[in-house]
Length: 298
Image 1 (cartoon, rainbow, N blue to C red):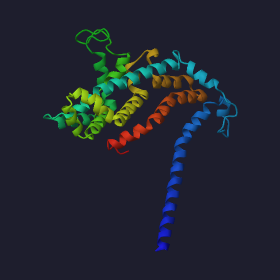
Image 2: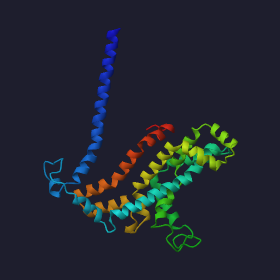
Image 3: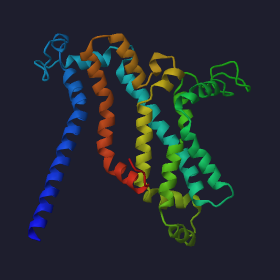
Image 4: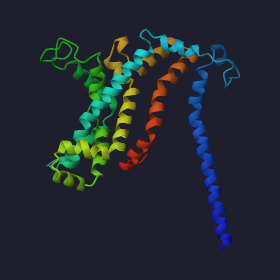
């Protein structure tokens, strides 16, 4: 009996060691490109093109970051500001729209509720690229916006504006789905107790439901913010002014302008992704809790 137990423990330890080794190797392979990007951003052009290549910079060129930050006409500081406006305000307004919808389909009892929710969720199956042109035409011809008349003609609508970059994403099916799952996981006894205290739906949502749903709410906010931060195709289509470019569009133009100056490209790439990496590490506890509480497997 003892021999069998010892063998079982030995097999478990071997399995644990193998799994740990595989995880370490995969983590190293995943992190190496980012480490290489950061180290390359401090190298000179001559050292980057040297064969065999060097991993650690022989001399640290912090001027690469200064060049990358100031090279665009408006500078990456302006691009960061544009992105913070679009991602920050856009995420806030997205939650303002999606939270009431998620509450309605999870707490109100009305005919067709399931069909409406299924219809909303089904929009996630529509490829993103298909919606680009319809959204563009709609925003360009919105009545009374950007000099348009009541028929949507004569002006440019929300073309080349902050609102144009944000508006199509206010109603997001995945955010509605995520919050609906979170709201349904909270026992209905809370609502019955709130009714005894004289609460209406709005007060119950703000003072009871949202505080209890904070991890999924942070998860939805983080996913929405990252999606807007990394947006390229839609901002590239809906804007033309250089001063309105968000970060990723500015980086796209910077790559075409810099050409083979990889030290500047790596510097720009590093300070472009750094805020999102920091944000994730600050919010990862709530992110994991939100995913777990809504039953989403990844």
